[in-house]
Image 1 (tube, rainbow, N blue to C red):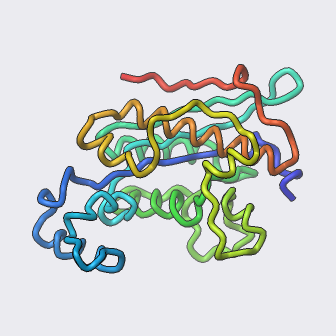
Image 2 (cartoon, rainbow, N blue to C red):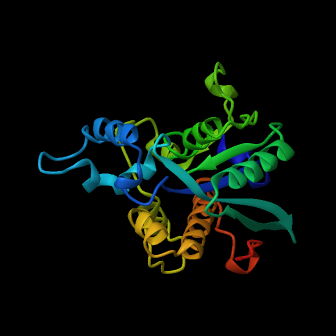
Length: 241
């Protein structure tokens, strides 16, 4: 099946998210109570809701999107080249609006969305934040009532499971075993909260996000039994402000 899907038919994406406010005390009293209830499922007995506040960013009800990086391949000189672009900033609504405009421009015909663990995180997170912000879901994310084969989602983590639903494999591990080179990063997902709210390193977060989305594309290429696309054929059109 994967051999029948051309890279140019896929929009690869990765998102970075953080808690919607800098710290627990900035939540409203009601939101603090709600986070207390939500975090009770994973807190230890000696932890307070504020102690695990950094994890609020992984829940769409308590977080926000600060970066969406997308990658698309296009034919070039008998093979493919890749163009990467990021939508990022402190204000979430403009990011989501630009991403929605891109999806609507591409349309649904023969286009798939692909992310690593996208079905469990990226796709539902984006859909939820779009609705929370009072925006209209683009058709590509409006999957309610659709049959499984009608949903245009590809997920490299799910593809690697081969039906083993209890199996989780990180993107870092897969990139290592498939020998996909990537720039040595000084960041991982667990560091994004502090890097954004405390260290103001948004541009570093964007670079990290772009590295991940390219890795997802290269991993899909490996799943197709094909070589990765050389670095000289990869271009980022993101312009840091």
